[in-house]
Image (cartoon, rainbow over all chains, first blue to last red):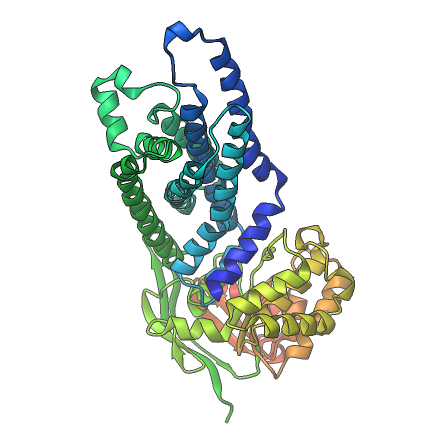
Length: 247
Length: 244
């Protein structure tokens, strides 16, 4: 009940902030338009498939989810800076009520964002079919990872710092090591090793496999993401518990 | 003999090199409005934080309506509520939504929470702003909402931290009226820098300095032995260095 009440409050806070909705839905679509235009200008003999819509749409849908880290971190950091949080800290709410209350309202937004991204991709020739539903479903644990990462950052950093960390660092790192904009294997060496350890390229590989209907190829990569998501959630709850006690 | 609502024994909070509250013994009776005064850094806020389970005492303990803040903070949290000093409302929620939210957090079901919210809106005369977003309210309305949010859980103990800070004289008097109506029904600890407010509202006043309770009693009882005829004089004498 407490979790549901807090989740409902956070849903209203998010939906009543139009800037959040723009970045959540609008920005990935703008990227798709731009990169599809670039792709149209690449000669076929160059054999450059990175920006083909079948690869681009899953990549951008995952990249769009990286903004959830910014939303969730801002939401929690903003709350922490006010007496409203102090009021809630004196209430019977538990750390898990707080964390779930932040995660649950952002999940439908993540699914809607992914669905809109794939619907938009249909206009650029993305094949329509069941694999697209699978691709949206695969984005769920990826979304949980990014939300939890944001909550972890928002639990330890102030409002200004999370803007820099989650707004710039996380989105950039997730872009570099993701296989969306370039193949990390082309860079090779340590860069590729780091990319293989981090969850970002695995997330994009799983989304691409799902969108292509290659279901057998989803899970080796998605396990990485699920493991990271679980670890981030546990860390967020643990850090928030400490914050609650130390306030 | 009156029943005790809060009993603190040897309550102490130490930070690295500073003792914020030093072996505080304090008793507040049920239904009493207790004014906790002191200059900045006297230890009032830390005391309130310990009593409301926001921070753990380094030493000592306090019992709130029979529950220890160290051994059973979960139970203490169910029976108290706080109206913090700064705006403590969700700015994008309406007045009614804020009230429903807090009622649900304290365990009321959806239907009951709505009913309680309507009752608080009536009791605090907030009908005209009920649908307005809290962030757009004036300071006076926000304070009133903040106190209504603290009361909607039907707390047995209520902490009011600077409830009228920054309000104009009319809004302040309105809020005083509301607070007076609570006397006898809820045990209230009031912290304020407005001495006339403490004098006007409190049944008893405790004055803290350097983490200790320096004096306690009614405003008249505090003034009388000092031979002063206004409370401000008494406060200055009791909270200053000269009483060490």
